[in-house]
Image 1 (tube, rainbow, N blue to C red):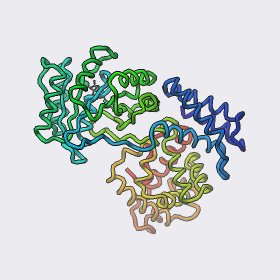
Image 2 (image 1 turned 180 degrees about the horizontal axis):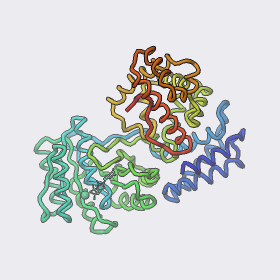
Image 3 (image 1 turned 135 degrees about the vertical axis):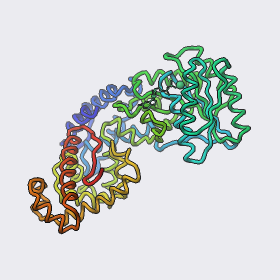
Image 4 (image 1 turned 90 degrees about the vertical axis):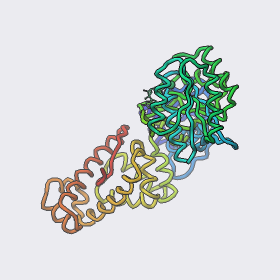
Length: 439
Ligand code: GDP
Ligand code: MG
């Protein structure tokens, strides 16, 4: 997807104006790209029509290239469809908040149930998990095991009880115990079938949930659309959780789910572990679908803070990996001007899994790197390879900066690693890159 759009952008580049003629090809690429990302056909059609209208009506902003402006229009439209901001989980005025999980088998409902409980605990919301998947004994055990893992109680009545009755009693129990939120895990089938829908509908009628969350496997692709329509028409969903986004999918399902149900995606699952749940951020997802990480956000932020010209130069350098230690210094200062390192790192794909501890350490490491770079000669800064071949140069720098020889050697080798990673990024790959001195 990234490549296709990249191609379309390139064709637009060099044109001085967005016009009916030069936009058609770019629109075709967007359309093809979205289809390849497994966005539903009708959703794609609507989307492209909307982009076309906006692009043709757009005033050309001076200092911004038409291709950039076009990207922005596509991006903004994606964000508009997917919602402007994150919508948090509902909270009932009087406890318990009742959350009903829905979805096909294997999408990650049971896992998401536990993940959600852990997430809510961080907001000091107590939870009770309710096991209504009586069709597979292992399903109840799975929830019990997860509950133990995160120290959250699980309500179950074995495999002989009626799921509707289990749900009813589970909610009653939560109310009795003063629990803040009760999450009802349900059975799924491999395909949508009437019995499953009936049962879900009955559970819903009985417990009157505040949230019905459709759990959708991001790898489902095209199917996500019909799936969403069926569940939404039949049960009525209030939101969705998109799971398995840690895979290599671009997340086209997000667009379909949102467009078809009109309901927000509230969380994304990014791994098998119970910690692997994140709030859904539409703008980040838009960039992911476009295949450019949040480089866009980075560019926007840079435009605000340091002016378009410098931001473009920075972007170009990042993408072309034509930078040396001087650029690195400039870049870290630029990053500082744009806000904390943490804020920036969150926007770069692959870097958002870094913990705050690592980030703090990162900031310290950056300062050390800066000190060492300051002890380099101009020649050495321009040509980092001089240092990898000369221990005596490294020793001199170490002395000057007040660090060990090992520190300088590590800086140089990390820097070289980063440079080659960035080169890959410039070629459209997205490695989980590291900054010099980190890790
Ligand atoms: P359910 O049938 O809908 O209850 O699905 P489960 O919760 O049992 O999950 C099915 C499989 O998907 C399990 O092996 C999970 O570990 C896995 N899984 C669930 N969520 C995620 C996710 O976000 N990322 C990855 N990689 N695997 C997940
Ligand atoms: Mg399950």
